[in-house]
Length: 472
Figure 1 (cartoon, rainbow, N blue to C red):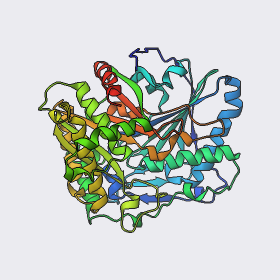
Figure 2: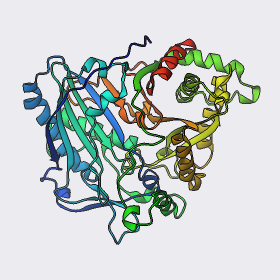
Figure 3: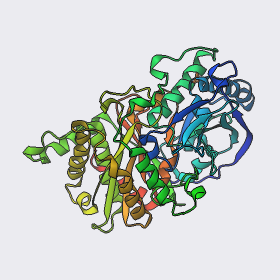
Figure 4: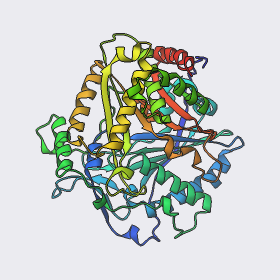
């Protein structure tokens, strides 16, 4: 990739800020709806929200067409979709008589919707990069949060005249995970494309399942996590401890000089990576799990550690989040609404990745992490994992440790999200610039590859761009 940095001023005009509620024709929308938080939800209680952008290219899109056709359809279909996803129209609350927060929808609640117009270069922002990470920030909506309430999601629709439009969605991590967020966005797209018919059922694969009793974990894990979050607030005041404000960043926050770029690992690249690693595995390691995820995660991690360089004794925490739905006993429906996942991470020294067999080391580690989840109880060790995460994040904030984690998944199929104007030209996860994460998605051309999104310091992106194609 040629390292040509694009820096532009994103001129944004906010045209409207409104609230979209479920339709009043829905019987459910006229009554209160409560959902308790499970231990899986409370784990993510105050982690930063996940911010996604979907770019749709329509070269002849005029403001008149956007305002008279696209905007009304998107608003109407969002309202109809919320009939099926009432918790997303509600808020996170902590009633005085409740031991833990709940998700509460009450009549007249709704989703904050921002409508905007941008003169920024659509072609650059929806490209594979390289451009300043901050250029995407005006396109993402902010959650409405306070000490006593936090919205579940927020949505922004941004017009790029004669280029297309962008849908931004910010999701509260304690309310929904990537699987649920993707299911909601695809439901919204389905209803919009089908013509916004009232009382139209969603297909079974998009119909949310709200029964919390199916997610069973160790007794008391929810309150253990909650008490750890409360202790981390550093305040003795009950009001401050119970604040529903979320942290703005994990692992030190977004730096001002971060740039973004997207890289692709093709099916042919995966073949080369397997051929490269197999001869170097010991006989006892021939059963290493060489999935496309393991190879992608290991290869990108190795390149990122090498791109940073420096002290070989520094720590590297590499992590991913596994979907627990199919791994619980009995398995939970993929339509389960909420968080049903667990983080898995390992800590190693940078030198393990820096030597000539660094990629082999990373493959063995990543494979071991995946196999442990497949061969053991998926919730094993969950009692310690939040406190361990706090320790890792503290070291990262002090620049003692490099975090490399994964946001998104190729299994989500985000490039199939068609609202009626074609598939997305580009999908990005903005929030990786606050967390040290990489994003993963399926290749947009359907070729079986994997798309990797990065937000790195400029000099690291230069190094990564040089390193990345050398071995694939």
